[in-house]
Image (cartoon, rainbow, N blue to C red):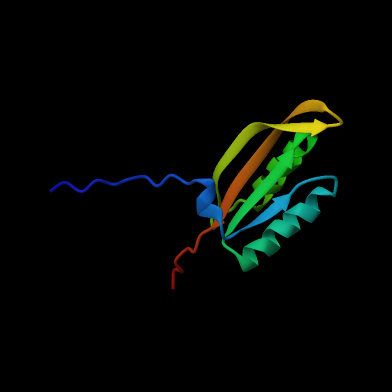
Length: 106
């Protein structure tokens, strides 16, 4: 029999046991440090940002990306906000990251 390899697709429900980092007005290195600290506790992480802070979220994800920290997927979408009976459509991003255990070469 032929064995089929199925590629696993990740969904938001796969990341129930994850840390969330919400990117905003603080300096970039605060979020980068927060991401690295979160990976000490859990292996999955989601970085979220809206509007003008999307660039900062992408930069912080790329700073920490390495051989053992990978980007699983990213979701870019519009969020609808209602403020004082006005509707605003703002872009938002979610970046899902995972720390993988690499075997040691000993």
